[in-house]
Structures are given as structure tokens and as C-alpha cells.
Length: 259
Image 1: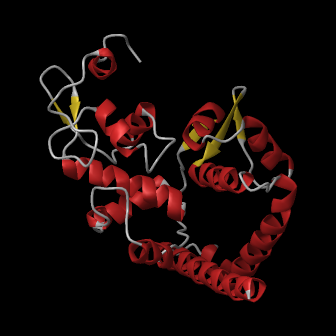
Image 2: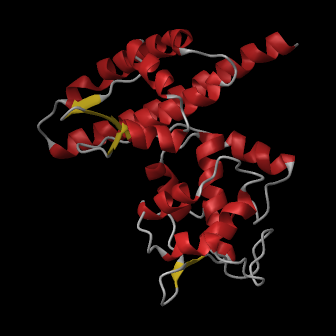
């Protein structure tokens, strides 16, 4: 970041007495926003907030001098984005769709929330599948910074075939789905789950993918554009249903363990 960046300069400037660190009432600088949400999101950084802006998920107002100013609704939107990432493991592309559907209105500006609201979010947890011919790619450095994963964990996931990076000009790149896999595994790693433990997930996913391919292969290979489009939509729907089914079966078995 350039030394002339006004937001960077603002971090060393005296605190604006008109900016609150709690629930936002007035416009806030990026530094004040970062402090205000750190209780709920300890890993939040100014660079991550800027990254979300680069991805067109946030659009704070700019002063004539170039400072970012976040309104209460901007901070609410940021909280929603971070919760969807943390609680539902949704990729940014899907989060963008959720925001467009009104998810930014949930939760209120403070750290969330009642247990009922948390349960409602958990009940909506799902896995979304999209098919893209040209997915966005992220370098290993970008993935590590975004997910806070240990680089050795990423390497371990590659060794066990959980993810497959793409080597380009000596630099390893990962698509958005692989990045979210790394994020989820980094969370599991906090409980001692390693790459070797994840082979069961990979094997299960391979079998399910093979089943869905078998069901839809003729339509997916069709030269008819509309038929292929319908097949892709069916693939996405089936993936969502099978994900929900696995979740229900897991919950059933976990209840037996807990009981």
C-alpha cells in the first residue's frame, strides 16, 4: 500500500472524537470499523476489509481527500459478510447473491445476536454449487492471508488430494472453492483435524460426484445449449439436496453419540 494512502495515514492520526468504537451511529473510518467489530471477529484486519471492497462487496463513501467513510449500514453489511464466511462457509460469489437477496438486513449492528438468530442462520446453512468456465484464481499468498491457514496445512491438503492447485509460471494458484475448502479445514485444524483425516471426506465427495455424473452425463455432453444449461441447473440442485441429506444423516448420528 502506498505511503500516500489516506486510510493508512489516518491510522496514525489522533482518534476522531466523533467516531465511535461501539455500534456505529456516525460515519466511521476503516480503522474505527476494524476496532468496532474485533470482539466478534478477532481476525479482522484493515487489509481484509479493503479486499472485500475490491471484490465489490462493500462500497464505502469517499471524502474529497480519499478517506473511506463507513455508514451504519456499511458496517452492518460487513458484519453479515463475515458471518456468512465464518458460520456458513459461503464463497464470496454466493455471499454477493445473498446480499442482493436482502441478507444484509439481518442481525443488527452489534455482535450478534440471540441464540434463536444464530440457530436460524445455522438452519439455513447450505452448500452452493456454480459452474464457471473461467473461475477466479488466487495465489497461495492471497489464500493464506485470507484464510489465516498455515502454509504447511495447505501443502498437506495437496499431498492428500483434498485440493489441487494450478501451477502457473512458478506460482501456485487456487480457485475460490479450493480457497473456501482451505478456510474450512483451517477451522477444523483448531480441533486437531489434519489432512490425513480428511481423506474420508474426499472419498465421499468423489463417489457422490461420480453418481451425479452418471445421472446427468448425457445431458451435460449434449450439443444443445439449452439442454446443457438445464443439466447444469439440475446438477446444482442435486448437489444442494445431497448436501442437505448428508447434514441430516450426520446430525442423526451425532445425536446418538451425544445421547
